[in-house]
Length: 132
Length: 170
Image (cartoon, rainbow over all chains, first blue to last red; front, top):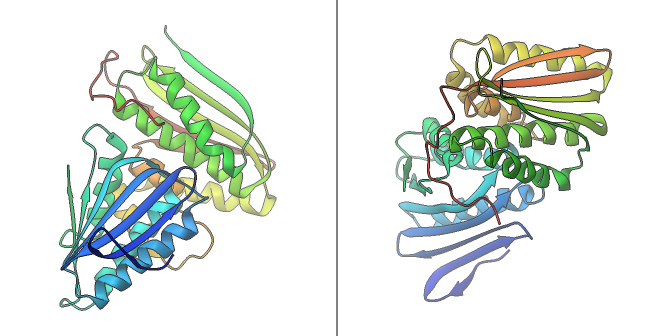
């Protein structure tokens, strides 16, 4: 899981197993993360490392916005959800100058996403933006 | 009275929990026309079965789901019974009591998320997620080392489609 260059983006990172995939790319002061499938115990360790790497990259490049496309995520268990909670708590722990916003883009018809993303935004209203 | 009950004896191993969730969601998709309730039922089933897979003394479990739209009161109930290590029975019952008796579920959820950040083994958030995001009431009862966790949600009014479907999981 090492950074590389893809399609003109300055950063690329990906994880996947048979049921879940996540990839990140960046241009300028923005990171875009695309996730698909179901995240459960099998991908938990990799997901934590992935989000940790996104956070480290964001700090090193003074990123201001991270967009997470959640629309094709079918399910996330509580263990994997914890990795998102920890990510947000890490951003909260940085200085105001280092902090960046995390925008979650959800699927309008996936009711569970609204509930889980509401919890994420409840952790840090000023850092987490949820939309379709 | 219309009751749609599904009862299964299952080996709850981690690799199968997702398949169990998909099955019950597909099964009740024909019955529960409220997509939000269906999602909450699927999430609750997943979290309860994953707890069995992670913490039960053996992977044997009984899963029972009852949908009673015409019940008094109308409700959906998901119950999972399994054997756990005897020393874990009292802490589990205490946790369920703590989750059930709180006046502010969301505040407790946020508190437990912050506490969980330091925890290495698992998230410890499955049951509070059921309570907070699933909007389920939780009860637990034990006979020896055999524990039954029961999650219940009220079902409002006649079955009606309230949210567009996504077509389920691939």
